[in-house]
Length: 149
Length: 149
Image (tube, rainbow over all chains, first blue to last red; front, side, top):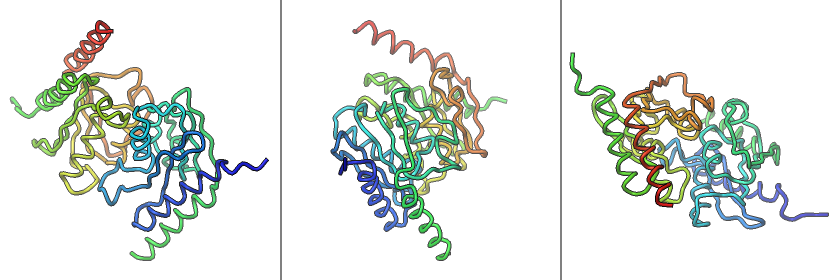
């Protein structure tokens, strides 16, 4: 049966965040956090604008979701992120005890799978949702950046 | 020769931050960041007050130091932290390309050494500086917390 709220639906919202990052000259990675069918946090990478290596999309989304919920644990939540989380973000997700992580494309160099970062035992992770779109916006960004320099 | 600015000197400043956390009912972990002999950032754990799993002492110190320096890389800096960093904080330190990490006591359960978190190849890490004092404040906190409940 057709589900309007499938993983691709929410990944498209994360991709909109990645586009917002792109437009600001930031490495285009976006994230959202949901509870059931409801989006409770949206964020995109802001490391350049904030001059801060900790300002990854996922980190901001975790802080925003906890703020929305009024509690620091995200046990009923799902994170959708366009690229596989890094060690820092996976480490933050570990502490949040989030229920589920859905990423778009793999980051085979710096992602938490390659790096061996441990997730919370209660957290499930799946990937490959709109992987092509999620990696293409990154490729487009780096090609454009190279051509500008 | 006596060096007034040795690692123990700066670790005592990180311990002062841990005491500030203790006084607020936060898990007492403190951190400072230095450039040469100058302290450019001080922070302590605020996860309860901010309702935010990302508000570890190290994360706030990284953000504050970058803000002070006007750039996101901490290449000339040293982080002093009372307890060995977790996956999240070590992951953030990876991105910061920090020169040196000095921790007080080990966290054998959740620390980056046990968890196998990768540091930046340029980053050196040492530990055991005032380890007893750094772990004792944590023990004191948990004993008191248990007695209150």
